[in-house]
Amino acid sequence: MQMEGSVIVMSNSTGDLLFYSNGCYIAKKDHEMMFNGDSLGMGLLETSFCETGGNPITQGIMALPVPLDSNRYYMFYTDLNSAYEYPTGLYFPLAPLNLYYCIIDMSSNNGQGSITLKNQVIVADTLARGMIQATRNNNGIDWWIVMPESHSNCYYTIRLNKNGIDTIFKQCIGEIWGDRDATGQAVFSTNGKIYSRSNYFNGLNIFDFNASTGILSNPKHITFGQDTFYWSGAAFSPNSRFLYITAYRKVFQFDVNSLDIGASKVLIAELNTPAEIDFNTSFNQALLAPDGNIYIGGTNTHTYLHIIQNPNCKGTDCNLVQYALEMPCLLYTSDAADERSSVDLGGRRIIKKKK
Image (cartoon, rainbow, N blue to C red; front, side, top):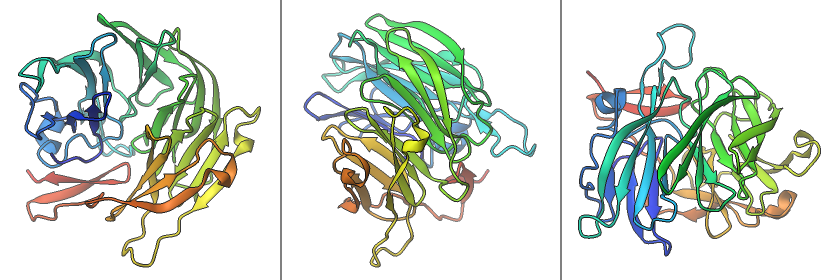
């Protein structure tokens, strides 16, 4: 499976692989396509992206276990279409026009799983270029899924319970995001009480989140200098106190318990690329893993992840180790075949087949 901007991987409670997807199809643990797992990419995903790398937008897929059901999973995913005329001064003319879901039943097909329902529209609207995120309901059972709307300050909130999707509503609050929303990262705090959405063009946006009602409140907007970052990511510490923002060649820590979150910003690292790595990289997407570490990816062709080893600690005591984990394969590759061309989506190079 080729992967570009979006990917989900689902494991069971002991970490064994169950399935994964790039937003175009779903593969089983044996890396073959799951039964009925094809044709998930809709619109321009199907015609221009699925054959060469999958859904190119960041955080364009989310998979969740059905509450109180050990066998079924919901996967949420977007299409990609020509939502805006081009050129009109917009950064990029493509955007999702629908949010879909499918249902995976791992008890079927001799435990290999199958798709029992797919391409079901949840929201029909011009949506942000990715940043689907989820957190638990306060009852510890149900899920809240949040999906931003395009060119607005509005957010769709969806509740998933044991019976399926039972609540969908839209709330408009905080800063209005402009067209350049294709980079960056959205993330919930570990305790589900804070929702953050940030990128280079629209700054850091932090909300309180009521995990009982799904309501966002108390928006805070923090700007960065223009030279600070383009590539960017975000991750919360396990104790939910510290928010880490990767900012191109820098990583910052914010204390969300502070009365002035913006003033709590601490620079914890500047990129220091070893001489043996041929390309300059950058800090990019971040993820809090089950082992309590925060792993940070980068750009350009290389084989390393950076690790924040003590993310619950304040300031540089968090211990960010650069190029700490060498991976068995390249983290960024491209196919330079003559029949392909590239376009830029939020700074990410996307390979497309020529018509």
